[in-house]
Image (cartoon, rainbow, N blue to C red):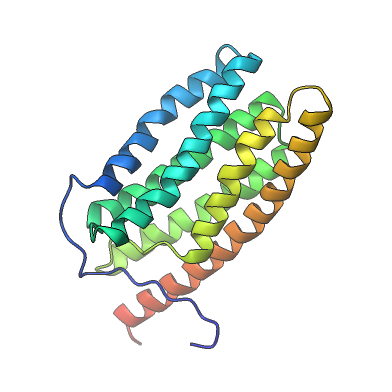
Length: 204
């Protein structure tokens, strides 16, 4: 493989809908509108803490649902779609909220948004030209998501005054920089994999 990470869609997974991993992913999705209201509505220190805690839950559940899927043998096709969808939605909503609040610069918003657009368009091509409905999330992609899930609540908490907030903000930015780098690395892996799958489906 020479350092190449492959993550084809797994046809051996089950068709179950109600599983513990899917419940966690659905809970993450249900938390998105609550999070959005907390961030764009009251804008108090207390609501920011609750919003950060909600993001912390999202990060923990993102790790836990994959762990449970393997431990309980509950990997499902719905989960393969629901898990990354919940991750992307949380990241999209969070970076918009952080940018609107002025907590992150717009260049960071642009870097993450551009990545999502590129990968989204590539997946659309994959679905239209092959029989693959989705790709398994890569280890690099999971690591990137976890870094960003750590970064966002820390940046929220670091947006307030005080020495402690300054330290928290620095740590948050460290996670954010690593998260963006890994996020684009994962995107390049996805794009390479999609290119190979499309080429294999339509050999010249």
